[in-house]
Length: 284
Image 1 (cartoon, rainbow, N blue to C red):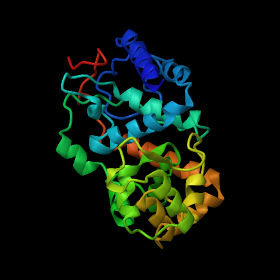
Image 2: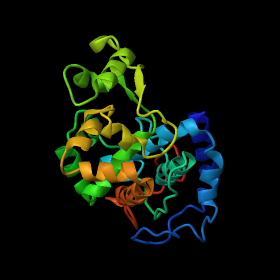
Image 3: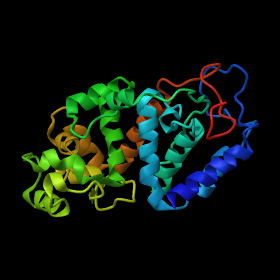
Image 4: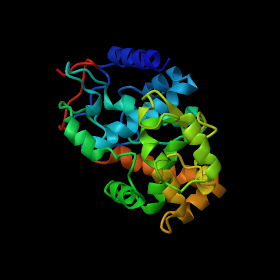
């Protein structure tokens, strides 16, 4: 279902490629960027995101795009110059959070698309590994202009979706920062150690299709799936915010929305930079 929605939205943008042309020389993002040229663009995206199971991969798509070299759809380019416009990555992720009953986030628009895909080496260097620690995470997001509170909040995206067993093998090999009952559950879900197939996974939290603050509840109970999830609750710098978000979902939503906008706005191409993909799956 996710890919059928993805293709339908791309088709919609192809039909509107002329009116999605950027305004002449505008060099900053703005909340009303498409107000005159395509006032229904947000409704187009919203109308076709109806499957709640599409929310986790769409949010992951947003992170993988924006984390690498800014939200420019470059990570979606393949060897055949295929790709999608930046507006899909940003708006679809925003709508995915709302579809999962999370906050509705107002995001500024006007990014242009990259004409060059990042190398795999660049992507590997900029995407955080599953073994990243608290210090590395804070440094990573501080580089995007986030406070400690926002950095802890953006990690709350882990409330959606699943984690593949291959990403927690190190934890199962000797990490004790989890409750014994949860460790037994992980071992039951990923029973073959290094021979666990890549398709095996565990739920990030029991409400895996709802964007809520259960992620923080779980970390406080010793039920963090990834090492970083568990360490957020015990690190003296981040623990106060984990407790704050576990106690108050509204505070989590507020800080996550702020972090989302900062990540979506960092290092973007505007004005005459980059390009506009008039045909969504090709560079021309």
